[in-house]
Length: 102
Image 1 (cartoon, one colour):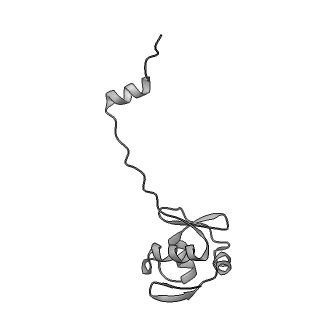
Image 2: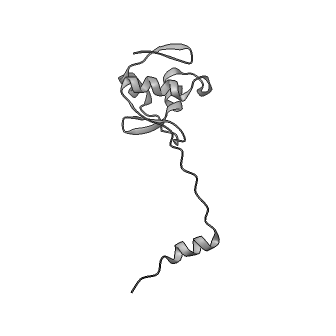
Image 3: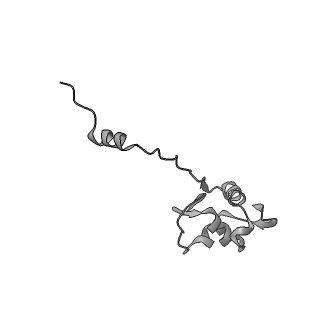
């Protein structure tokens, strides 16, 4: 499949992407991710390997789009909801629980 990443055309094939990622240890995922051969890789790491370009030269959206078209499962970065801080009184109440009714 022909795609453009960082203004450069690439002919990518699913089996070639899988072969190029063999033996490469996945880095910790902090953003978008892709599943290749039952391993979860950061999209930027895969993009760097298959394009041989610096990660700053392309966006994760470009690589995600190309990998999705090839049939790989991509996951977007999940932003956790901000934790609400409890007051000391609310924290103590939560730890003690609710009273039992008789």
